[in-house]
Amino acid sequence: MTEDLILIFAYHFPPENAAGAARPFRFYKYLRRMGYECYVVTAVDTSSRCDLNSACVEDPFVTRPRQGFGWQIERFIRRFFLPGATGTRWAIHAYRTAVTLLQKHPGRRLTILSTFPPLGTHLAAFLLARRTGSPWIADFRDPLADNPGSGHLNDFQQLTYRRLERICIARADCVIANTKAAEEKLKFSYPQHASKIHVISNGFDPEQRLQALPIPERPFRIYSHVGELYEGRTAVPLLQSVKRLIDSGSVDPAKIKLQLVGPSKPSSLPDPQFLENASKAGWLKLAPAVSQEEAHAVIGSSDGLLLIQPHSTLQIPGKLYEYLQIGRPILAFVPPRSAIEQVLQKSDIQYQCAYSSDPPTAFDEAVLRFFTLDSKPAQPGEWFEREFNAERHARTLAGLIHTLQDSKS
Image (cartoon, rainbow, N blue to C red):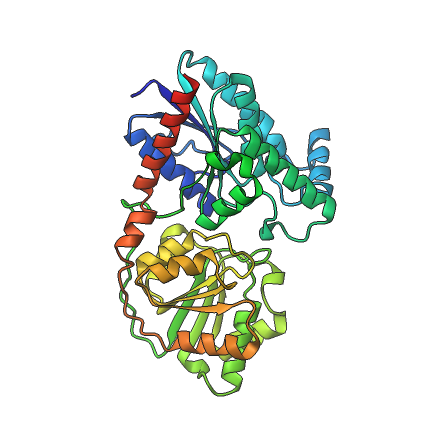
């Protein structure tokens, strides 16, 4: 072990099966392999994972609903100031837990790492960095300001998010974006801080690789989306396109089945009558959330995979890296010139983009071309291995930690 202590604020963390848990866990895992002592402060109950150096700090807004004045204050903040923001009161408890931990490790060289979302992780890290003077690395898995996933914000709410982002960028000693496009946007927005803004992509764990499974014999092809459909991530245009292709005779509904696995907001799906008709016709299946192992089995045995991200040119959902490992064709419902398309272009996997800005005719043509692609799996290529291997990412992070600590010496 080195004298370094890495304290990670990660609201989501294993054993929770959430997309936001994977990235901080991979940082934690491989930094420890390099000799760093890591400790995680999380909102997740980690008592079943004795292998983790962690402290569970319950989020009182979630675990004690409607109890106490503090709950009402946070509810007011969420409703009027920061819609969608999570963990604002949790941040205070997480910060206090971290202070208690540090008292048990006097003299250690501390680096603070917080991974957003939710907002509470950066708030806790801000407080701890101000108290200790230790370097703070702020990791942005999503944009804090101008995030399409935040829903419809009024001018005041947008301004509040921008001010919070400005404070985080200014106070943090190092800022990490998870796509090149997001890095460039932050550097453009904060040119005075450009030198401390870096990119470490999401990716895959080389010790938990996925691969395509044999496709069972069946009279139709299955095209799957696995994951949550929420604000901005809508499947409506895609499903309407499939219906148009069926109605025109371009696609036989008996030959395809689209399955959407995971929770969906009503705004992300067509009206109930549409869904009922499509389900009865046999070409659409809606399924609840499944375990990670079941999700991998679903995508591994699908003929093709659906990626739905029409609302953002900057973000890349973690499922893309799983899809690329499977190696079967991908239909990406995205804006033109998105970060997702840039990754697909450099991979060796068959794909088809259906652009959110396309008129119905062009959109339908793109979907129809996707249905003609061969389901034989391919390998994503050396570029994918080089750019998205989580062990390499941890080495990059370790280099940033080393540089920050040297500058503080």
